[in-house]
Length: 447
Image (tube, rainbow, N blue to C red; front, side, top):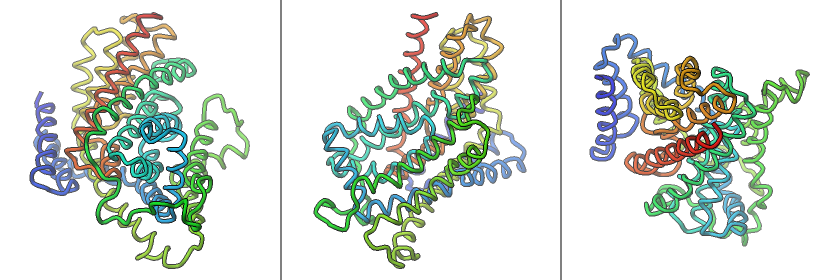
């Protein structure tokens, strides 16, 4: 089990280098990616190729999304719109229930939207809610990230659960119903973790070098209304949702000219750029200075660049792990054990922890489980749906340094790498395990 030992040593090095040596996460991740690849016996050319592919692929899929989301966030903050919107939310939920509001928001948003994109879109609002409520950013950030993660891994039309349902021959409707129910239980566990543990970790919503948003936008005639401030967030989400619905196998919008248009507008890159255009309408008067390299847009691009480089390095590390074959080693060793409904969870958890991608973990586990279902007595329609959801629960366990979402959450929430392991990694472990327990309880009742 050399690969497993190397993985554990890699994680320990990343934590030590960033927390103790104060090494920038970008360098720590790249050093670890090359070190793991070389020591695992991968051909040297494949190590370099994996690093390049992982870095480029991650940035290619989420780089523009991060930049666009950061621009939207800066305009929301500096125009006063974020605090107007936060005030409206907290008037409904109350300050004490701010983490609950973010959990529910994450649970709903990530049904059609990738968790990475969802966190980026909601990040500025999340900071504003934490500051307005006077609580640690850790509480709302973890509540949001875990809410997003639950439905991202369990509920179609997210690609992972859709692919798993197809591989296992599970009914998509049953997967959605069970996924939403068990995802709600998992989200509740994530919310409790956020308020009982994460809230005790003091993290300020804004770094000292960040210019804080206005404290009292209600008294400022220039600040946009809460409804107007919501538009740059809601429209991209709506477009992505419509694209997901339009591409469902049932083809609810048909196959006519509307579908290609929705498919284009609902691409996260396009949807977020539309959001940027709407965000430019938030200031009472848009000036050239705001759009310049030294203005609001320039600040957003600089902030996004740091996040993108770290996220890309995390993708490079994850790609090296994927190409090393560690997922196959862990998956096949666990698949030989007869653990009933716990088997898909444990296989997915092992693969997820080893290589970082929830989608890869879901699809790989589904492929390993498909031929085993009759022998396990899990080949009924309900059983296949529950196996799909169990795989999704396992694909949450755990989010750490080889997962791009880990770096999105930590960098957008002012967390250190050590904070990320204490909060995001532990939170996903708890939430995924609770999800698996919920699947086990459901299986005991209906199978």
